[in-house]
Image 1 (cartoon, rainbow, N blue to C red):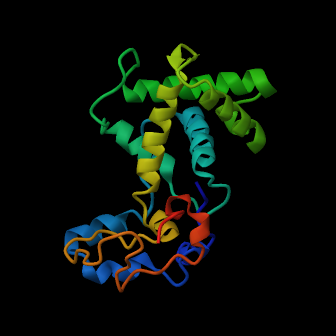
Image 2 (image 1 turned 180 degrees about the horizontal axis):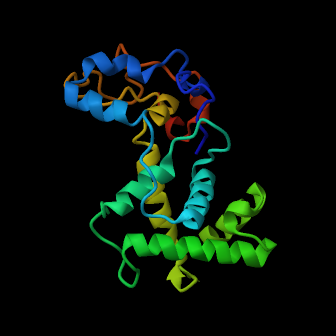
Amino acid sequence: MSSLPLDPSAGGGRFPGFDVMGQEKHWDEVTSAVVVSRLGMPPDIRFFNAAEEATATALCDQLLDQREPPRVPVVNMVDARLAEDQTDGWHYEGMAPDGQSWRDSLSALDEDAMAHSGCAFAEAAWETQTAILQAVQDLGSEDWHGIPASRVWSLWTRYACTAFYSHPWAWEEIGFAGPAYPRGYKNIGVNKLEPFEVADAHPAQDPLRKGTS
């Protein structure tokens, strides 16, 4: 996944001139309030302790390639879900509930980083963090600290991606014009744009569009 543009209103270079908040006038009051609130101060950290927050931040920055500001406050949003027990309503058999699994897996990342480079995961170099996470992903269904690695990977990516793509800055990056309610869409189909949408300036960079017309 690519990182957010330095100017969150710039469409990430892929959608020049696109401004998702320019669509606010088409949303109802409740929808607008929800979206605008995501641009305000992120919620305070309530679930993670300081060490877990640091590790989770480094993890999510790696998963989403957020290398520099401005960053979507993914960890704050993940933390809020866990603090309020707003899970997906299920967890894998043999795996602890999501909150405990987050704590356990963050601790395991610190263990791996300590063994690899003698420091916590958040303190390791970017390339070292990448290598540690790649090793986890490469295990597939094999166990990682007593848990199938693929299930830990699913836990991390489900929460991180849900948080990231709920934020208007991420919408800017992918050219998403926000909620369709109450206006709706009329031009349905691949590459069929609405009048308020902006064409992708670099469609070749999108693997999902290869072979489409």
